[in-house]
Length: 206
Ligand code: TMP
Image 1 (cartoon, rainbow, N blue to C red):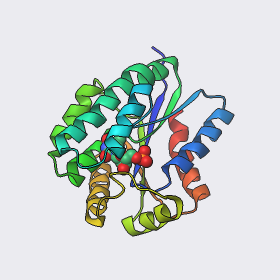
Image 2: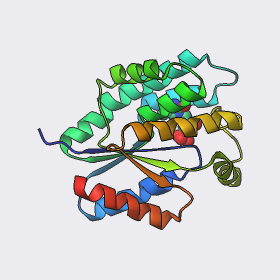
Image 3: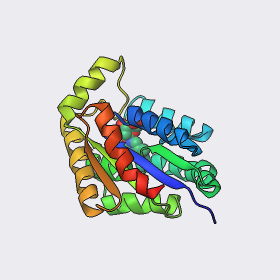
């Protein structure tokens, strides 16, 4: 079976994932690869509706319900978009995946990280990324960047700074546990330098 490459981008809100995904898409397309750019939550029609609930519902959502909503979005996304693209041989460039749930619902909301991961592994029939790029940035710098670009914060962006500090530590822990899957980049570097680091790591996988 021909198989593409599954690349995920992770990091806090405001760490520059969208910019890097776009730079990477241009580079890969220039090399003649089919590239599918997508994101969670919200990579499918069903996902757009889930995204609206999970990010813009007024008031609290119970942590387990929040975890299930992200997992539901993920299950549908992987089954209908990501796996078919990989089976065609495409490179899938995805903004956020299971690591986001482990970091945000696990460490952020303080659910059991192993249970949160197990839920998403079940949802995706255990589809793992070939490479995960973690754009690491201290939460204060990220907040300053977001302030400059947002008029309105979503439910998770509006969380307190301790929440975002826990998320960052959780991400760094995940990267330490699986160095062969992760590339950790200092997101304070200029965008062009970050893009070059990512390309260097990706090149041998292509
Ligand atoms: P974004 O698309 O702007 O990155 O926003 C998605 C938000 O949802 C972001 O604050 C992180 C959060 N999130 C989770 O809490 N768990 C998840 O599994 C995913 C995919 C995102």
